[in-house]
Image (cartoon, helix red, strand yellow):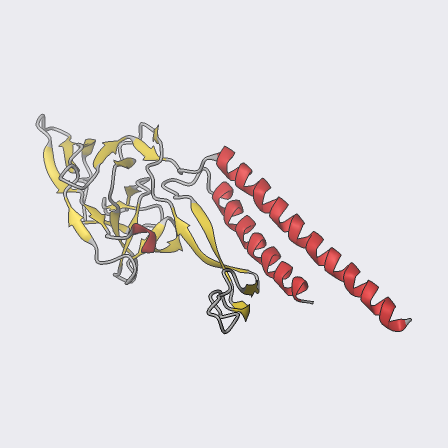
Length: 263
């Protein structure tokens, strides 16, 4: 019976949907996390009668036809890159992006990755690094006798060194944009990689046209809305439940048919 396989595709799709929602809720407190949504599309159809089929020699046509669907499948899990709220931390090495743009991070193998999470720190050599120890590009080194670090909205990093009254500029943070941010490949650790779908990286100075600004002492929170996620979870749960009832109904119909055959 076709209904069994159709309903099973619905259950599988909603199971994956729940997994996406669970990941969103699990990352509610992850710095810079961007919520994801599951998208679905219908499967192939069996054309018992194609719409527009000629039904008589007089030139009449079937207005609707007969098409029997095979179920549903997941077509994509896309990322919603809206701005998250900013949370004050009072840590001078915490920086948030207000607006578009990603920090460029050099991983241990020398390749570039990108992140919205600005919870940075200092390496033993005084370089600005991520929580995994990856260098924030372009490399910025803070002198060992620094008593204060200021980062302005344009990403300029100034350090006040002991024994000096005037701060000195020690580096310039950059931001990177992509034509299609949803096409970035998430690899965990709050990092993304460029892909053919994302388009090439486009570097720029914070505050310039098309780029966000830097806010020191703040972190961008996840853009997860708990009410939306719980609502989506309930909807997915009900859809799963209804598909399971279709399987139960189809099973009962098969049982009735088998009894008739046995008689």
